[in-house]
Image 1 (spheres, rainbow, N blue to C red):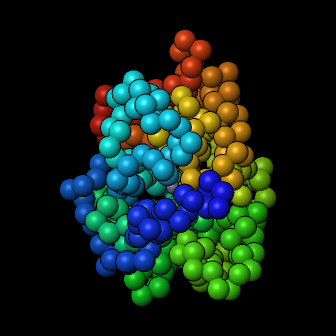
Image 2: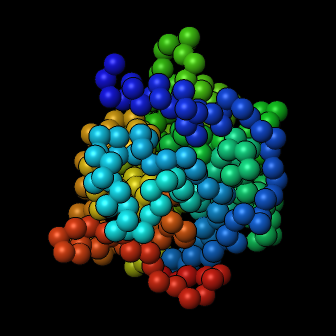
Length: 322
Ligand SMILES: [Zn+2]
């Protein structure tokens, strides 16, 4: 058994969040607002977007899902330095809504009812800004993990967003659908295959480099999954780079090589993180992410030779303009 097989079996035995929450589906909760941040409007030039908090991704410990090969003492020292709890993992779970050219576009759908009480607040968040699920015209899927596609179907496998068309990188679609082992009991694979089959008539596959809706340039950031897609969101001279699941915690910005078992290709994901870090420190890029601490918007700085996540300073709790 190699390292990642050990991690996979450990996840199944200990009930890592991805496996356990899939096994025990809980009723879809329409709103659980008290656990969530209110939607935060993010204006990128003339583009109106909202960061909507779907909930939280939780694990009872950092290892073995994160930094699986790292010495415990070394890990503790780094976590302390970054003021991160060493006894649990907590990641934000955010969805981006974009209003453009009469379209209401979601980047992913959160976990839906599949993370129990921890998530599934997207619908409530949308309602709080006067948007119904049926108003959503388009959904862009960044990759096929449960916390990104879990909100597409409800408990009865009906469409939560009945009017939406779906957009997905062809490479990511093929990555999940080419799983030939019909006896697979990998709940993540089964969910992705079910969802992608169900949306087939409404699905538009794209190639990397494609610009969607005149404001989103698509880019491959391989490693987390085979076709993990990130986006440069732009309007005029202004832009924000949405790096999705390239980093799950600030310690992966300072220690990109420590990695996570949630990456399909551990070593490729490290390379991708290093590439994004270089881009950030070279260009001062403003990044948005799905799981970094709320609002998951910030910069990657080089401090004393080490890269570090710096959350954007903001004062108005309802709106950021870049
Ligand atoms: Zn994720």
